[in-house]
Length: 165
Image (tube, rainbow, N blue to C red; front, side, top):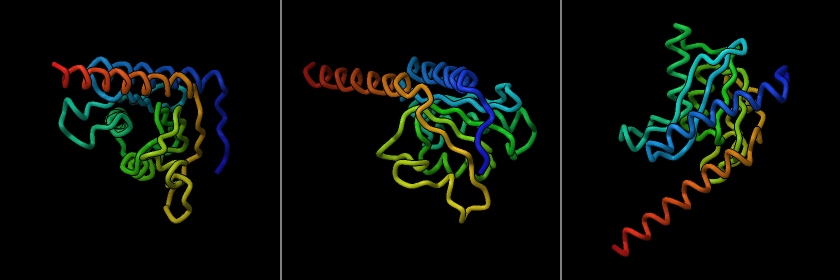
């Protein structure tokens, strides 16, 4: 797989856009994960978690961004696109990335419990699939991690308070 031609500034800009999506999820009391799909340096898809709101297990940020990009491109193929996501993709999202043939994946924070790009397995670089993606992790990692850490800390605090009431 070839390496990315994007500059550090471009990567950080698009990850900040993914972080904006994550903040939208947080405002809905959802796990704050956001994603954007980029093609020719333009955002063609956006998504943020809405699993609690929708009560649909498949409404992860990456899947919603992919669906948005598919609609905008009028194609299921995203062969020259880049995905920016604040958290390492899970098995379901990695599968969708492979199936939509996204060229490059950039993520912020690792997910040691469910990540299947680097943490638990390396689905996006597995040569047994008909498509592999270039992967780069750690883009604005501190910001991405802190958003999730503070969300879960606050959630635990609220649950503890509810038990007392």
